[in-house]
Length: 349
Image 1 (cartoon, rainbow, N blue to C red):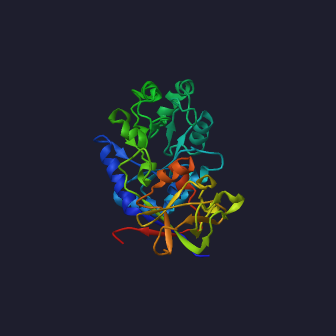
Image 2 (tube, rainbow, N blue to C red):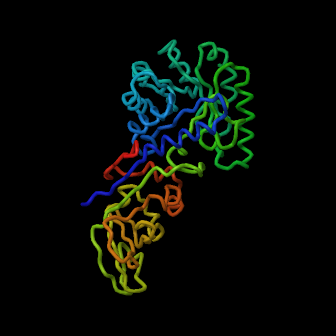
């Protein structure tokens, strides 16, 4: 089967990081979130590009992800583990100099007993109710934990992509109440929090999806192009169906292209009869069901049959495709399949 090509623009990722660094308040350090294999784009190459751009602090979800980034970057940059210090991770955290963000009393006990003197941070729950210590828990252990010298106190905004949501101000007030006077550097803002303004920036911002061209950072440079090869074309008469369950029926004589990608490659079935592919600047509707390895598109209006159609590119970013699928850009990015031939562009290459 012909191979679909996923092009990842490392220069665009670096430029997006620099822009969000400039958008962070003066004196604030800007980290980079590269969890989930850098949102599906390859943690090793992305981390190296961001390090060359000036990033010195990285956030990943789990210690195993931290190991990949440490191998890519070598000693020096700080690698923060958002899931904290999990049982069984002690050797990896210690040997690879990873910095866990401790989320619970159990994690505090585990870390301070197993790795005394090893760097750590603390994650606090200010209203998202996902990770982090609640206010009463924190009050009970704060003197003990602060005496051990955490490197960071952090929390996470639940509704930063909606600037007018009242939870933003509520969480900000709780974060102040839990951390003011601690003397410890603080972090509250991911991409959406940066865009909310300097009151949310504190000492460290940690952009994630904005680096990869996603909302809510509308000024982001596009990062990904996904070109799908046409395997076969056929003429379909009016009234004939295309694909499983006769989900699309030609209203007129049509030329249908079959392309090499499907839901096994991260193109969700909800894109059926909804997505658009592109031949340069010319849109071509996806018709029929998305199947495991194949999709079909109506190219009746093209004067020549192209080798490829783009489903991600300058005319359709990850959020545009997500809108068609009824999901979010994060899910599109992290579902990009292993079968794609990946090409990294950097330095004008």
